[in-house]
Amino acid sequence: ILKKKVTIFGSGKQVRDILFVDDLVKLYYKLYINKNKVSGDFFNVGGGISNSMSLLELDKILRNNLKLNTDTVFDLERLGDQKIFVSDNSKLKKTIKWQPQTSIKQGLSMMFRWLLKNKKKVENTLKK
Image (cartoon, rainbow, N blue to C red; front, side, top):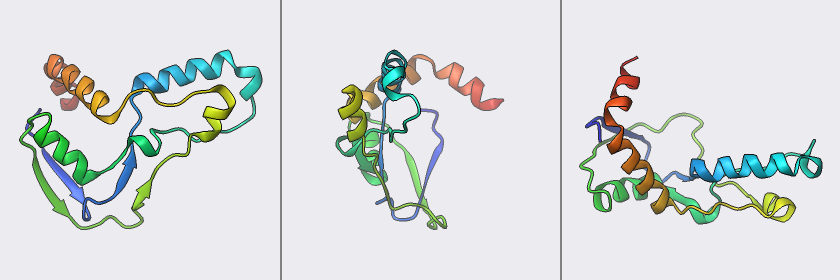
């Protein structure tokens, strides 16, 4: 959107899970209202396996679905970069019946609509 170059370090086959911010906020609220049940415990939080993709897949979505002409370049793999990171949210689902509700495509679409609407704000923030 801002016509900036995107650098992918390594092959681009690295996999990450993606969690839309609205789902995270809903989780925080659910943890708060269930604080007696979850206090002192720990949980993995992320998009989970159903919301995971490679960087190459994300680049393809940007180009094809969102019609962004990204200037993508590849650089050397970063030392210590994880090849795959996907959060296991099963404990949250079992304990407080939470799981992400927003798919990657829905979340990206909403995020990019917001970015287009607020492009000047984003540009000004990045200049600081």
